[in-house]
Image (cartoon, rainbow, N blue to C red; front, side):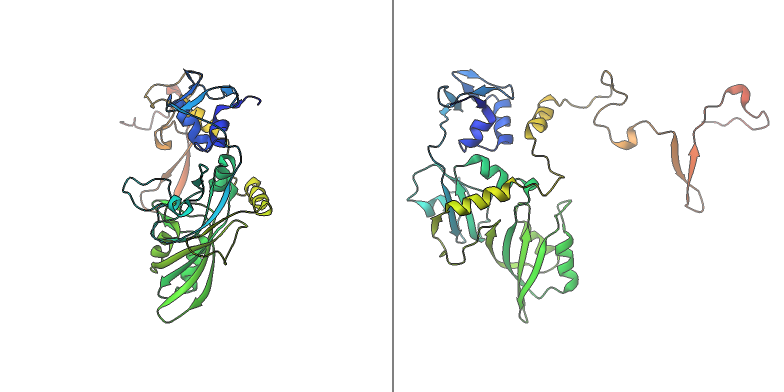
Amino acid sequence: MSQERLQKILSQAGIASRRASEQLMLDGRVTVNGTTMRELGTKADPGRDDIRVDGRRVKLPERHRYILLNKPPGYVTTRSDPHKRPTVIDLIAGVHDYVYPVGRLDFDTAGLLILTNDGELAARLTHPRHGIARVYEARVLGVPDTHDIARLAKGILIEGRRTQPANVNVLHARSDDALLEITVREGRNRQVRHMCEAIGHPVSSLRRVAIGPIRDPKLPLGRWRELGDAEVARLQTAAAKTTSPNFELGTQKETRQRAAAVPATTGTAAGSHQPTGLPKKQRSPSRTQTSRGPRSGASRTMKLAAVEPHARDPRKKKRKF
């Protein structure tokens, strides 16, 4: 095999995403032929070199597995749980390849979940930049009105960050509850539940019915199946698209910035005009400043002009600072 970047090899082996793999390298947890590799961009040949993470040999999977599971409530979306709760791996006992869940479903949430050993595809499916749609059916207490639905669709402020716009439809409503179809394109923790709580209609039951182009209403709860070639191709096509330009996929650049970051100091870096990491209020003022009048409250612009001492009007009193 030809040489590849280490972070790509680790991602393809299902160890971690590329960004997380770069952090493993920076932490000194990756070795190649017995030598610790911390430099990002280092290449290796997975077919010839001895690549290890925390002392464990890394091998690329002989074949990729793509499993669709209809997860029931009461299972943790992880490979192992320190509290010994049932995990989604317990539901695919017949699968002997090393696969892991793509994204998460809450302990109390049911629905479709993909498990794979294709690290490259898993990273793309979970990265917000690609905007992979996740469709949920949420039964909520009470019946949201049009204002509540508009708030969900526009975005809800959760823990200081507003959620991205969502598609929301009322499938049916009764006197005391309603069934909503909510489509989100980011994977924040318990996002749908928090969104519904924010409008005063908490979720009583939640089920994921679609991941991108993948749906299967006939798959029984607690059962799994292999994705077909056509389904995998549709997933790969969806994951290749970029729909959210606010998120960078260039994780190498981000990780290099984290690796090179140093605590902000009061001094000025060489070649720069201002200390890095300072809020705007502490930076040098521009040539124009805005101040507020003492009575009217209206803003007025005051130009800063350098006035020589001899040019000042002698009739004006000298200000005391």
